[in-house]
Image (cartoon, rainbow, N blue to C red; front, side, top):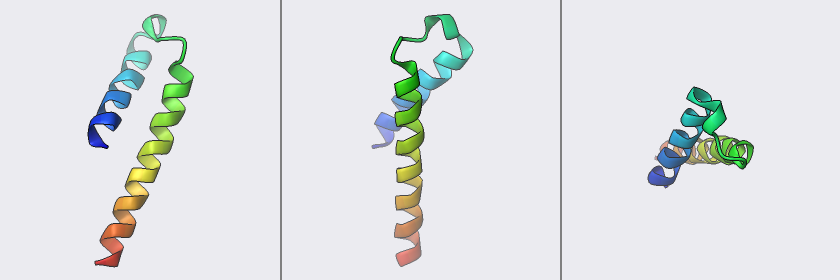
Length: 51
């Protein structure tokens, strides 16, 4: 899961640094990145809270 988030993060960062080079599906990647990181962090919080 972390590898996927890192790759998505790099694509989002590249789109911010060099907008002309962003792929046409960049908005979808941004949304997927935000949702997946939210799910990941909530899962970690829930897991830590149950211990």
